[in-house]
Image: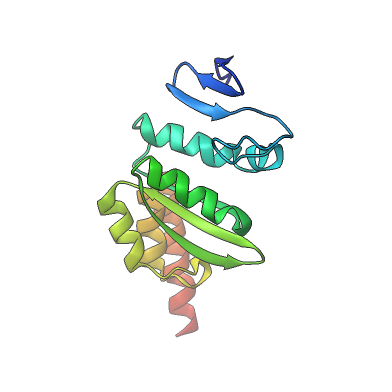
Length: 150
């Protein structure tokens, strides 16, 4: 997907999103605190905010580097977006953001994705907009595997 941008004094203005993105510069831009590495590392995160703001999705899950936690939280707070962050380990965090009811449900689920029940896994997948048939197949597989252990 090509993004239509224009350079406005050390920032990139995304015309379709109506948002200003930090300029790709190796110097620190004091206004928004981004440096080139941060911009590159958070490109997917910024795109997810764009998708959420456009109403494409009501819940987003992205895994990001823990060192950007403060930047991520400040951005979500400044955009008034509901979120919850779970530690993954190995310097990573899972960042969920979106509509308040979705975030409230995420808060009730096991934060460790590999330890979720088949029901939690199914709910989260459906909420994130994953393919419904595949989520049903995944649920049945996990339930069958769980029943074989019993």
